[in-house]
Length: 91
Image 1 (cartoon, rainbow, N blue to C red):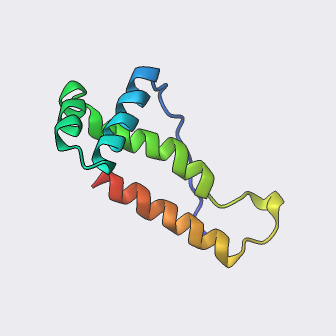
Image 2: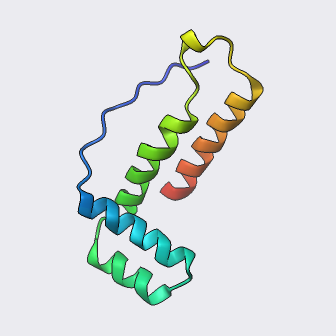
Image 3: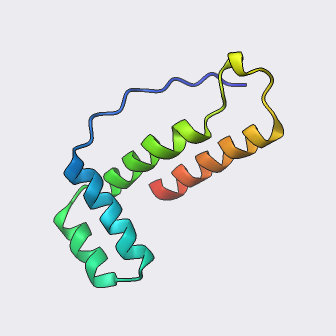
């Protein structure tokens, strides 16, 4: 298994987090106008979305450390799903 190194994330301001999630809610509700406004108000929206996903998805889906015992098939599937989700948001 390849060894990975996590770099510390820069602090995310509350305003940036709220903007990213507001944009996602507008997209989910198919409110194109609101999504456009949120994206226009925050020129770094793409980076904010990736940053939010990495902060939430990566820690939850990462394989546990050696103290957890042998990883199971489900752990590998969850970790792969997390990588796919982060890659999808990046693109």
